[in-house]
Amino acid sequence: MNEMASATDAYLVRKAQAGDSQAFGVLVSRYMRAAYAVSLSVTSRHDDAEDAAQDAFVVALARLDDCRNPDRFAGWLLTIVRNRARNLVRREVLRDTDVLPETAASRGRTPEKEAEHAELKERLEKALQRLPEIQREIVLLHDLEGWRHREIADRLGIPSGTVRSHLHFARKFLRRDADLAQVAAEHGPTADALDVTDIGTDMGHVTVGGDSRGLKTKVR
Image 1: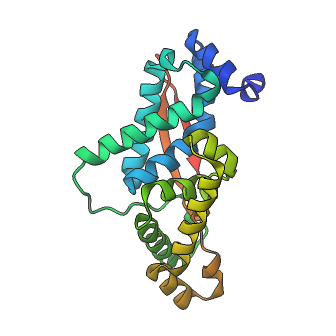
Image 2 (image 1 turned 60 degrees about the vertical axis):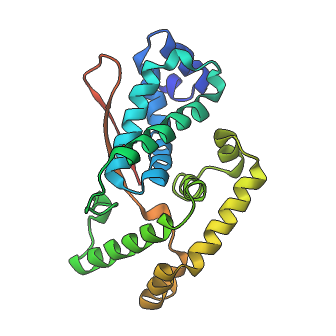
């Protein structure tokens, strides 16, 4: 398994195409967080983002033979994620639930701190929703997942300079957004550093092939 974990995407894709479910499981673990981030940038709702990301992996497994360039698996996968998320948005009725539920990340907080934390996340999410989809996607991949500009450019098929530009303007917008400005005013200087890295969620289980066991990945 350690050998699998350090293997290239191309190697894992070819192994999975040959029927190795463990290889596909490694790909799921490797890209589940990124898939969730891309899905969230489209749906803006936790439950929908989770469902679309998981659904995308099922579709990717079924269509794996269509991945003609295994070296570009990540970009191929994220295209599927984006399409599944958009399809879900079109058919889903608007819900009244919060986008970001309470998670294990809140353990250890007092009820007062937890309420404050939930409010901060709600306002941050409202601010993110006002960004164009491509900027949300880049912000989430860069700040939530820690992807470099060149990685994002390669996976999204756009120039690295365009990624930097989108990230710059997205952050500029977020710094002057009314919700985040109110957060800074109410919660002091520490709110100036507020970013999406504090968003967390359980991604749930994805079943690989005929294997009944699930793959569980946490997004923090």
